Image (tube, rainbow, N blue to C red):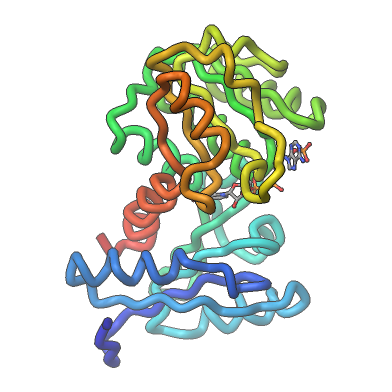
Length: 264
Ligand SMILES: NC(=O)c1ccc[n+]([C@@H]2O[C@H](COP(=O)([O-])OP(=O)(O)OC[C@H]3O[C@@H](n4cnc5c(N)ncnc54)[C@H](OP(=O)(O)O)[C@@H]3O)[C@@H](O)[C@H]2O)c1
């Protein structure tokens, strides 16, 4: 248990609802393991109260920063003083540093977390052919992160094709060296297959992409954390693919969050 004193730097995770949040507990463990004198708590903030909550956080001198989750990731942007490159690309912020003068700098570390989780699992992104299902919030962050990490080829498939097209255009524009397109893609011709949709959280969900053509030795990676082994990962493992679960992304985000707020 973290011993909180007047010297402890305080962090929050703002959301509505908050009952499902486990990132605070993992971040507290991460900080304690590294003997960093900081502690994290969820804060239940209704959408209408977000501007007042942010204004108050600016004025609290022992606050180091805060995470932002559903439904505040986009609404928080105009309330901040600056937003990093990744946050601007994705159009959403999920972690904010409070500077000593009370100014607030936000960024999006979902993509860094996902790429970090792959790297920690021994996966090489540079030069890889990536097939990604989903173009929502996590999908946007991950598509930019795959291109930033040197993927050679990226195909984005999404239930709403317009979102996939818009994302593919934005990634192509930012990273011309990664051949990026929207479409169903060819699972047989990919090195890394990624589910960034919420499919797999509920029993009976469809698979995010067909798995029967995935090559043996390809990597199948997930954003969904619960269940730990989703039907997508189970089907890919049955074909001989290496699998990386959604928790890897969250664990890698802990370091990125510590770095962003200067606690590392
Ligand atoms: N592991 C981590 O650290 C981490 C971090 C962030 C998020 N996540 C997880 O990532 C998942 C997505 O979160 P998000 O914030 O990106 O959500 P989001 O912005 O609402 O996007 C949801 C995505 O899933 C697709 N989708 C939803 N239901 C579908 C269905 N029935 N059939 C086909 N596609 C469907 C959506 O397609 P449309 O565009 O067509 O609606 C969209 O691409 C959630 O499970 C979340 O818990 C994990």
